Image (cartoon, rainbow, N blue to C red; front, top):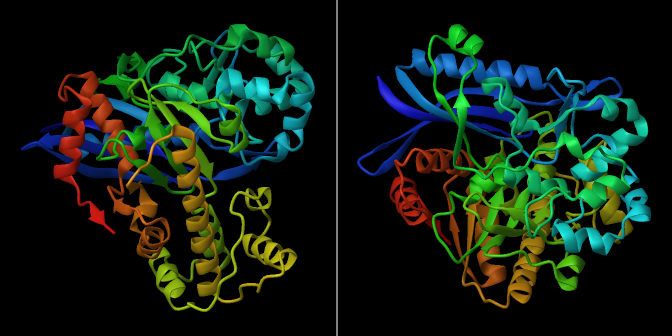
Length: 463
């Protein structure tokens, strides 16, 4: 049997269980199990089927053995900000409400009535998004204060899935930083903010850094699966894992998927007034650094347009169609809140073009070109802001993740930014997750070695 590590990487639309192992100094990946993930209406809110996700993880574990693997460790990463609460008996007492749910509409401004906005940024270094955990918790406090009274444990989505595997309660650091409730200076929960918002401090445990083993499987799971393995904390925030897979250092990166996360790795937070104005964030990195970055809307927009076209075109076809619309020049501000969760993405784009007196897109190619050109414009602007805020000039931008395969955007970004664009690996999040597990077990001994392995294992393209 082939010994391996298992990365569970769950995004907003699908999840995968991927086996990884080293062979001749190369990282070999094998996708064992892929499954759907989607939001569903439940108790008046948009929620994730978190118990369904755990069943899929168990299926992946069983399939790994059927595929002749001997898994030694497993680690889970997901999107950020969403959470569940458990009571004193460790039973879940909330649904896993999704960040696109409307419960946080207008809540950010209510929080600013209680805590000064600039103070929140100075203390946490986290950018303002209406769905950050701080606003979700305050929305819950207003809607269901008795639930918070009953709560004993706060767990973010991957923390909860790790708990179901091990029975251990953890708040992993990289994901904890995205709550906008953690002090940037000392990685402690912000007592003063919690008090002002009437959120009980005792539900949070001290954040734990990635690269640590947190325990074996529960006895029930061992019996069910017929084997045991170690659970290791990767960067449980998928972007933290993805950034670990950037093959180079000292580069601007874009982790490109449903969201585009664009930034640099930095040794300390930058929470200056200018960084506040540009809405940059200082999230925890999986290797004890800061991911200084900006959240940009990303390929969610084309995913939604694809869905509205009844999946008539593949993503590759949308790229080809964009090339054919050279005369169409309309662009939108991809970070406009109307694109976060519209009833119709196509209508939202047309409405924006109408308001800004631009030609409205009609064909699939025009929609694709409008979205891609708008993203490129946002990337170009963000790169300039990064250089201004860090006081450094970067000659390269490295794009990782699924969006790195978009030839149209890679080519145009190189032309617009006058920088060299490198792309790949596409499976960055799973790779970063696996690399951290291998560093925890000593199989990989340094960040430098991990970068070297990634470079010789995956195809990197240059534009």
